[in-house]
Image (spheres, rainbow, N blue to C red):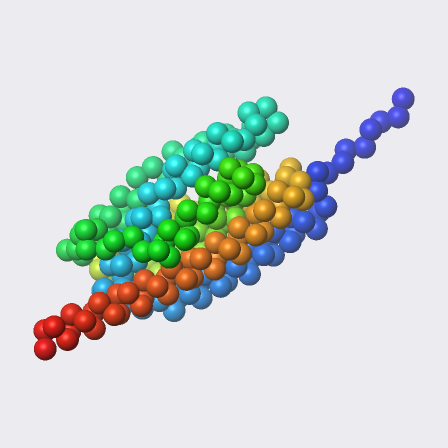
Length: 230
């Protein structure tokens, strides 16, 4: 009786391509974050508000994805996404409380189109492509936090004191999260890995566009306020 060879569901180079795409995309996002004017209070406040808007959907996205995995053939993915739901609970409130710690209110900051353009496509990818496609979104958010989170926290703490909990928590917690996300790549076929690659680059670009829009909006409003005072 001849033993059957164990065949990998994907070309090993496909996982390497995902990792390479992730590393390049995180560099792009890191540059955008490091170039952001954190010292301008209005910009930081708008960042916290828009962050609240997209983070409040994190648990819904993860739960939706978990429910789309096959409970038998994709059990490890379903379990990881389900655990991740619990890990993200209340993180939107961290951003909201930081905003309030600045003496500001979410009522002063409507959700921007660019923010919705960042998180809304994830539901489509989960439901129309495959729930594992959301890993591209996860890799960008948590990869950027790991790469430059501590540096950002060191920048904002002297300026805003305790109103920096969101950045602090994600610079600490996301190290473990990113390792778990990358570990899930093994076992996915080439088509699913391609979905992740596409979502990684798309999410990186969308997040950079959101940050740029945050800066434009805050700077414009600050200028208008100055003109009114004059």
